[in-house]
Amino acid sequence: MSTSKTSLLPEKPVGALMSGLAILRYLAQVNDPVGVTKVAKDLKLNPSTCFNLLKTLVHEGLINFDETTKAYSIGIGLIELAKGALERNSYVQLVRPYLQEIADRFGVTATLWQRVQNERVVLLDLANSDSTIRVHMSIGQRLPMYVAAMGRCFIAVSELTREEVKRKFQAIRWESPPTFESYLKEIDKARHNGYATDVGHHVKGVTTVSSLVMNGRREPVVAISAVGFSAQLDSATVAELGRFIKSRSDQIIPV
Image (cartoon, rainbow, N blue to C red; front, side, top):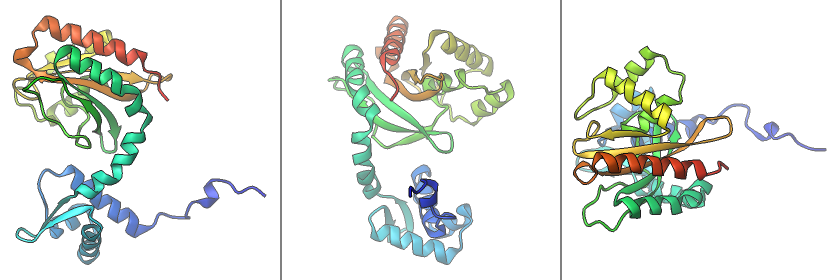
């Protein structure tokens, strides 16, 4: 007698495990180490239960505890756990040659991003050029999915209304914000060209160029972005870079 796949699942999620995972996701998103009281309050956990979960996660090396500040932060152990999955991720293996080609040809840092929960993206892989000065990024880091050029791409293929786009726009931390009307024009341009650019708006002095890899249902799977210093990328080069990334994104067959 065969057993259905769903019958192997628990009747309800294990509460302690769900709470522990919630803590890990929370610490991965906050910018600074936080104490147990704030973690418990933000996640609506019992303080005693939260404290015991935090101690367990520290013991397992998944989060760090600072004895001086009594604060918790995400640990290197979580990255080590994810490393194997990232290395085996088919998209990483598939896209890596394209990333290196982009980095070498244009002297930029080429990156591969995947959407995760809570409208965020995680950096799966990157390729650096041999330039002595380059933008530093770390595999595993997370960003809001609507930032920079990549955000324009995601909005361009979404069904968000104008008001919803405006709320996303206003929530972004810009160093040199464009006007909302110019932002909408850039999204329309991204929709037409298949790539988007951000020249010094999200981070002053930094240019990003992005394109999405789409599946057969025209849904975004991963994003390829190039990051470089604006002073080294004139408008003609940025346009060429955008077309090049788009052409490489089109060559990737979703798996």
